[in-house]
Image (spheres, rainbow, N blue to C red):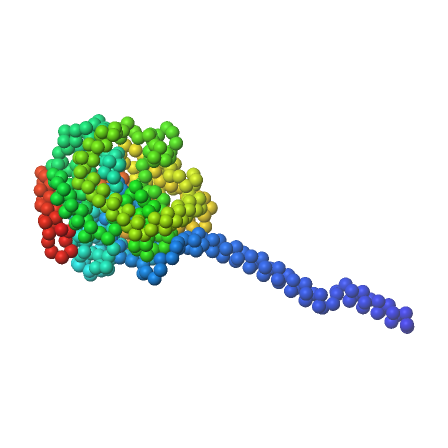
Length: 501
């Protein structure tokens, strides 16, 4: 009997040993739960970390030095002059407005009826003076402030950009050789510079690209004979109309002044050079630093020819000299040391974003090398227009932010147009890239193959000037620029409130 009781206790003991105490099982379950929760939290944390890295890439380090108590400008008008790095500036405005869901004053096509003087009815969605509040305007136009004031709010900040007329002439010749008769007839830019009147006829369409192009874009008479009085009156007209004039040769300093004038964060004005032309014929490197680049033979100039181009573009040369002096006066008021510090910060920030966003060490590449065909820049003229490729493997938020910085002007305008006017936009699957007919112009057609109003025109990338069919016939009927010139002389002589005088 006693033996049986001992045997039973042994069996129970062995059973307890095999099963183990209840606390051990509970501890094991708690450990497994903690491990599973840790894995789950790790996944969530990694995703959150990626998002935080994206946010920090474009926010925490992108605010820049304090701007004090100023309030950001959300009403901005940029006169996009030709061949002055203005496509890069427009990208800045597009990005800022898109990220903050601002309302753009967009053209019916890709520009506001250029080369005719701007008319408010060229703005898509315009229904009368100040019926709708537009925030940002920046596409190509021939400036006409009374009409612009019908579109933009009274507190709008007006600014533009200028470039040395010789450098501008080189770029203009490279882009518009096929469409400007004066350039088309010349063997090269040097040949044109030696005797511009041999090739230039003011009555021929698109020849405005060959003389005083800045003066023309500002809405003034580019064919007027130079006089100091006329030049100073034109300068005064520009000063009254614009609060800030940037200088493309000093682009980074210009961006610092613009940032403080608009009270925008640093990342808003950090940019990559867009619509840049290849500085060396194909066959060598796809990107050559501009200062060291050899110009194609058609663009080569002697020192004497450069002087002749300044004389030919004397009105532009006066404007550039005057506003270059004003620009450096602004820099002095800002503080040279402070400017140097902020330019250094801007360049560091650009390098950081270039390494994060771009392939090929951040250098622009030929359009044919860009795998994503939707971001290939429009091509025109004697040289290739370069673009960028994004780094692979970017998270979605970073990819979108980087893409905004490199999206070409034409594609960006189409995107904003589709968002702002979704009913008018073609189906994405049916949308076509701009077709490029002979002569360098592009004509973008919708799925019904009807030419959209105002879609034919000259862009920074090249093309034939125009606008609607009515505007083109108006240009063809006009044997000279007398109507435009009379308007310009009226603006210079004076007028009512808000007019250029």
